[in-house]
Image (cartoon, rainbow, N blue to C red):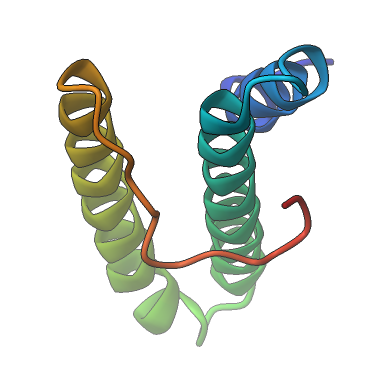
Length: 97
């Protein structure tokens, strides 16, 4: 089953695979994939913490912070891309380069 969470990984991965000849697109797609991979893993950790009763205290604020930071970074990246500027995501789990 495909969820919206996995689409945030699939989109940049497809762009990275298809646009290998364009260094700008390749770098942007790799950064977006790496950023989304880290945040996907942190959201997964949050959901695992919610399963435990004690973890709810940590998981709910963590999910809120992750959502706000993720939205802010994506909006900032979109604005920079619309102005033909590069954007390096601040938090990345470097898998693609």
